[in-house]
Image 1 (cartoon, protein in one colour):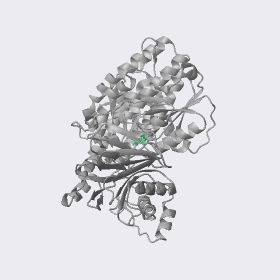
Image 2: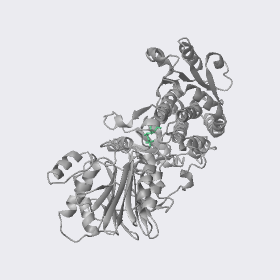
Image 3: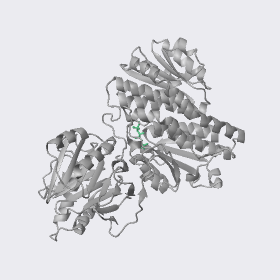
Image 4: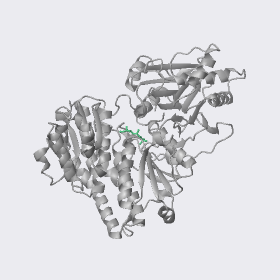
Length: 616
Ligand code: M6R
């Protein structure tokens, strides 16, 4: 969480940073600020609120200068106030810092510094790091040089327990900016006569496509025309210059009112991209080269552990059903934040998958590292190809979904489920699935994008239904088998963007307690496609109706009998059970979107949230 952008070059830094911060706002939007270096002084402007608040603040007095650092905050230590906004300066006021991450031992460090008369102006852990760098810098009396600043940053970071992506400026050193990372992403953008530091390439892709994705324990010193990458313990570090593979337009709204809606509408294409080039008609299977495993190695897998957080964990749950039913391999989902601290008994032939759109979710990363420590092969399923999980995993499958900016995950979910299907098909074809079974799965999968398009055409009708239920007290989402995870995913969407309390459950769990919540003010949404448990769902719907609970059903074309017992029905095209989650989730994404819009909620930036959760 939190977004950083730093600029050093020939142009005015402030406008470049403000425009970059807009692209990073998905990472946090509690406060924003910048520091610009000019004439031996650092001018700081910051305020609570969003980037547009910072812009209004700057309108009166924009600092002029050709290097600067900036930040958009997701609050961890201390509320969203002006003082807690970044940048923070050190005791001397000469050193400014922006920080993404958490300094876990900040209180003890602060105590030490306060004992030495350092005065703090915020509640943040980050200000402690700014002071610590200043403390290390001014311990020495050498002339101001890049090496002295680098040494101070290095020394300060050795004190720190926690995670960081930082950018640091010194008032007397106009030609250098220092960056460092541990656990929080940081990218160097290489321009012509100018260079950048950013949490994410989306902030700099307008200016350059050449980027260096720093590794943990890397330090970097950038000037307008040069850069050096070091390791925290001294000496040069290895790096690679990559070319950013998406364009600025892909991260624009292109006429949609919200990124979430745009991303919902992109799903026919993103689902296709997840399977593109990965289906072998001749072999009736999927080909996932990125797994980096031979057929022999894949055949020895006797258990699969899937891990992720939030929406990614729901995609993993669909994966569990897919792998078990199509590949007949035991699979289980472990929430990453739990898995990282568990001592799960596994054996050598257990294969792990870490699912993460951003590839930066700290709990998923930690769970992956824990799996690797135990000697397991951990494969990543990520969208962000340059992310830490993508780079540290032992192989994996990219989603190729394009940038997902809306905080509510939509297209990444369907891409992950598509990849889970490809994986189940691959493993199934190595075990008991026949060539004709494989061919059927491929044919059905290829038909999914068009079926999603058909559902999107019902948007106006879904909007009307959403408006009807927008003022509900709470909502229950119910589904079975492949659609039990969809109930959870739909409830998460509803909660996070509309703030209506919602929960998702396997339909048959209703009578074990949940049915007590059913009332005319608490509608139930049943995900009841024409599958092996359709009749069971119908019985549960009857139970809700008998208690005067409104029911909205998502079902398959032709199942018109539901119109008799449900208040509203949304139809999806016919498809096999195992592919239904790719279709049933689409109307539910639209349903929560329209409810949030109806309630006037900030759909793309829901309160208290950030897109990528890089703190524990
Ligand atoms: O980037 P990741 O896929 O690792 O993110 C995991 C969750 O934080 C994320 O899916 C979150 O639950 C979404 N906001 C849900 O819409």
